[in-house]
Image 1: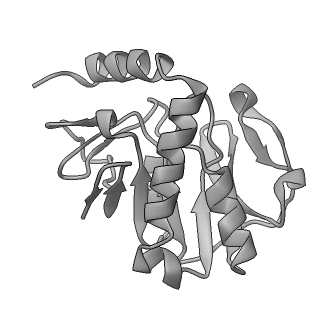
Image 2: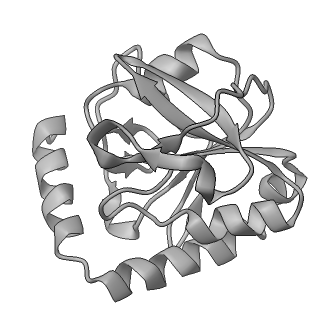
Length: 182
């Protein structure tokens, strides 16, 4: 089995080769599929990452959610802890850890059934996830009740098998531009 570090390195290299147009095109395809999923339609609150570097772009997803009356909460990190805070628009974001946009509000989100959109570097067909190595999402999920978790990824980020540890958390669904894995 390929080790996590090797998978991380390979996926990061592939992501860096993506053009702006390719990122936008694939992200648009993912967004169009996401808004048709019943779990998204039924969600009153969305916990979403704010994309960084070559991640699946979440901007249009969040605009759609705002326009459809959904509450939005995005993460902010502090030391090794991540929390989600409600935002009402993108003006409530400012560069934080590693330059990633974070909420400047202090209205902490404590939803038990929010739909969570998860980033990651690699996923397997059983929805195991390799993150960026800091464990923010795993620690958050291990200490907070969440609703459905949907990982957003480009299809090339899906690998055959990922070895997961006891603190690693799977997504409930994995959505790429080509498929939905449930």
